[in-house]
Image 1 (tube, rainbow, N blue to C red):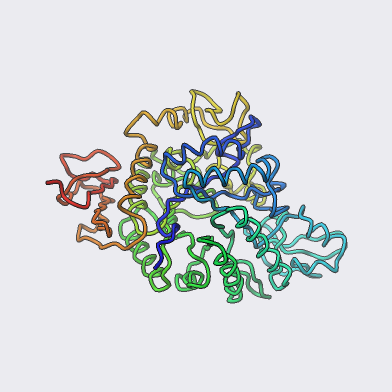
Image 2 (image 1 turned 90 degrees about the vertical axis):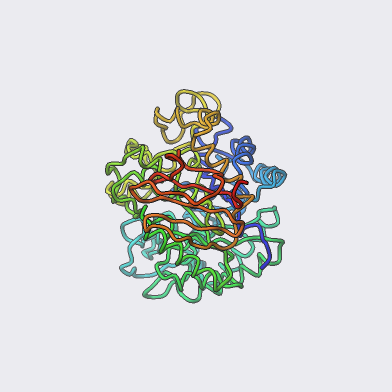
Length: 508
């Protein structure tokens, strides 16, 4: 098996609108990201994955793409994107971008042409009569155009679904891949990867979608070490694994792990199932605790119900901040120690909580509007990062311009500047963990160690041992030199909700 970079990479997710503002307009941009590349290098990121940076009306945070071959002017220019790719590569950081193949934007040239010239509508799903499908964002999945026909949008009405039965759509996206690979992009994350093909009765995980990715794999294989990463929310692990066959996608997000409650039996089950799913197809697993669509771990792990479910069902339920913080630290070291790739969502390394009480008039996620306000949407995990200073905007951009979403005053203690000198901070836990991970962890296998049912303990290929205590009692650690712990030990033993790493060879 070739030791390709993504098999064990630590990939940092940048939600560009909220990462860093370079020009002071309150919105993150490429200038801000470029200025913070040294931070990501020092953190230990092997690669950066960016959410969509294309021209977009922003009806769904950029996932309504108007032009796949350019940059949203609020973020910068194509020349700036190319400069960013070059600068990241100079720091030995790979670049992964989002490609959104299921749907476009109503502002795209193709859709505008379809409105005026019905003969071109076969690029999308236009029908004289809609069926009863519902949008994933709530409400009907069909919208009527002035001449009476209806078009399909599995997400927002501003996001018309492509018709992948049309060869033009295949050719378009294969060309989009080449466009960005030619500019040095190292990989693509494929949004809603299982939804592309539709039948009269179904729109998820149809067999024909695998032919799409076999053709994409041929494109990526014509370049040097380019990676295809699928966003796949599939309950059937065997169906999931089919996307990772050697001639399809290289890897995919592990949402079972992200959704898993803070429970030793459930985590062990998910880890074992993940490893068993990936091994037959030779694909590396990935481990994800959060992203731009889910409740931040510090808040989620502090709740009585620590699982994650879409729809905001747990929004606003009580969360013990101290407990959530402790568990999030333990979960971070557990995830870093598992074999395969790792994703870190921006702000995770700062221990940011979910911002649950945003003013309703500032919420921008279409989930909120289309649910009639019953679903709070995903804006709470997309609040701009705190970099420095004692009050908002916490160094997010130059000057005092308010960011596009407001930051809590309490974040002054969580800024990167505040955490850097504190050796016990979440930021330094991530910095140290990712540094050690590069030496001892990443791709490979694990061997479980016998322990009490409340403890997850395993040894990795390098000999490093990871022990996570998810119980209520202090537990002894095996003999060996302590490399890193997520919290203080108690007389050399491991307290509840704490993870410890032990060195490969005991100290002499």
